[in-house]
Amino acid sequence: MNSAHSDIDRVPMQLVQGCLVASVQVELSPEVLHVFQQDLLEAVRRTRARATVLDLSGVSILDSRDFRSIERTLEMASLLGAQPLLVGIRPGIAASLSELGAQCAGFAAFSTLERALEHLDSAG
Image (tube, rainbow, N blue to C red; front, side, top):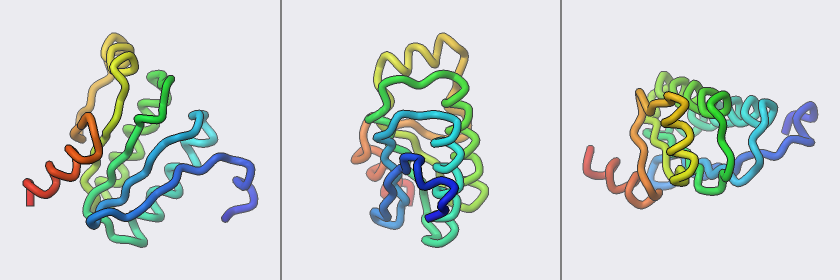
């Protein structure tokens, strides 16, 4: 682990059915999002994951700036060959982001991890 980021909460990741699943259970900040981006992209490269599933079910507050950072990270994962999927956005966050004009362009969103994995299986 990089000592410069040792005091930053890290997002746990695991490989499930060839998909890199990252479950955000920490409070988001620009620093956490930067470290997450680096960790995720390195994990996609190392595992050669076919998809990246970002689980936001543990996030209670998400502003448009944080969402844009997440969106950029998913775009980068896509450039590395991992189909980006988003799961677990809470209804209040979805409503707020929609009012702010945020869109899920370039990736699919699902209510649960199970539905996201079913989608990947059916897509081949």
